[in-house]
Length: 431
Image (cartoon, rainbow, N blue to C red; front, side, top):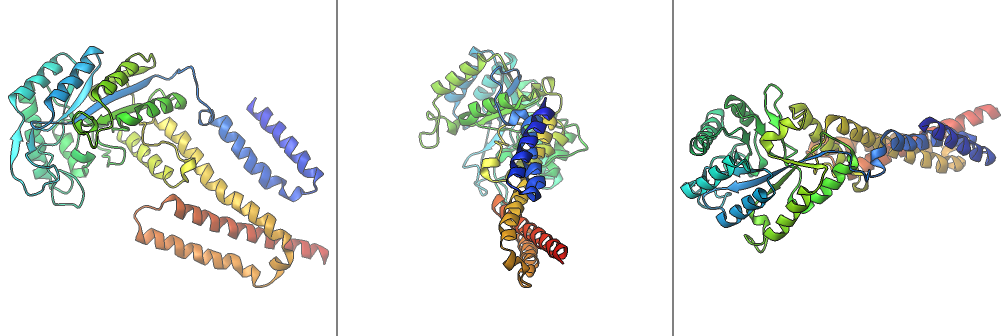
């Protein structure tokens, strides 16, 4: 069916172009229009939304920074909401929190998790509502690297000591295994992954742009969105038709108006309404992070790395071409389709510019025939090389504006070169 429609479209286009006596442009225009059509036939989910909601959506909620100094009243309300709807949630627990701000690198005062808060966790864990995950040890920023992190930059022995102490404390106090690690500020390094593997952690939940370690049994369950864009993530998951997609919702006490009137964007009542709405959706399955491998077949480092590469590629495209690539943890099959479409866009833009340049420049035959005009492509090529080299050696990430400029230069160079070649052939025929 798709081939018939595509063939019919090409016939109409060809006849239309023949009538206007511009046969020379049939091939490039047909090629580009066919590619655009194929994008919607081969990847139909890009172009429309399936209103039947045939896809099963898996969601995990992750509450970070449960500690001796966190808001106990709010946390009890959160547990009560999830208990009312009999759905699980993962709590990232700090065993020995720094007494001052997390970013305070000087303070050596820490507060161990209190008995009252341990009992709240223990009860919720036994009821199957709360999965207890280790969220660092103190959550205090270290000075080894110039980013917010507790572990990145520390040596193996120091990371091993802190993570083991935190794991042992929670397991001894709660009486159950801790298999999920949530790095503070979602920041870690390759040494952290080695330590987690040594200490028999099964899951790591950071964000979508971390490191991965191939030679381990760790499963990667990154957070993808916050509560305020959860419904956007659900709608996108329904459009994508990806049964292996995962949405992980991260939130903190400061997201709630009751805990922080300045930073909070949602009340506990509004939060309860969202959970109620989600629990009524037949196509949504809510799990804890530790249950994710029972519902999602692939949580490998390969999938994590591919999601990262898709995310990076998306930010090399103009915003109107960009997917909301970080609010869903997509399957590898879905990533392949998205990246294919992205690469098609990256190729089509210079081709389109080349076509426009060719159409304009070929009409300016007297200008193209000039000897100096023939040097323009080489001059632009030199600019392109210097521009690309300058970006490569001076910035860590090449954004979409730099890519767009390079696409523009490539298109103009190619378009002028084609015009010059066609003009030479025409002159040769005349002689």
